[in-house]
Length: 196
Image 1: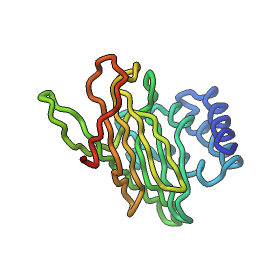
Image 2: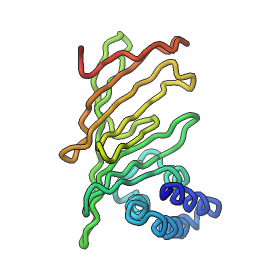
Image 3: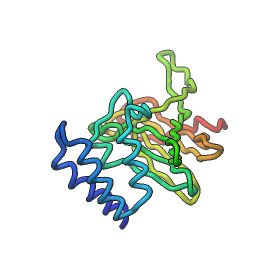
Image 4: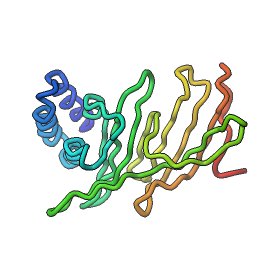
């Protein structure tokens, strides 16, 4: 219920969003969302308000998408896990993940990388680290796990599913499955990590 109110507040503010009104609309969204769900909305608002300073989605920030679909989860009294939607593509968004710790003197922001796998032109599977991922992320605050389902194309016949646990200020890879061949077949994904 709280998250629906946050989305509604952000959506209402988007209707008035013009180049000159970005700061004001963000403040209105932050105020409405703060009343609805409080600290989590404020964490998102602070990251977006200071996006250049914190290098949030430096390559591709669409403020409308970010205001509507970004989320924060309180980990403890001082720290939030924040998922920022940088942009929205045809069937999934581009996301970056952060730990955010507001303090009296300054705000501490730590970008989180994700381990993933990709297939080279020669068919080899290689491990990569990335700060931005395209997909549909879901976060389980009780388990502190993040699952990202990425489609390599809209049909969904190829893609990846990565599962991570938030521990020691990092996103630790638990499981990674992928189907690299975009062949029109909805076959099961292959287990990549952990290896068999």
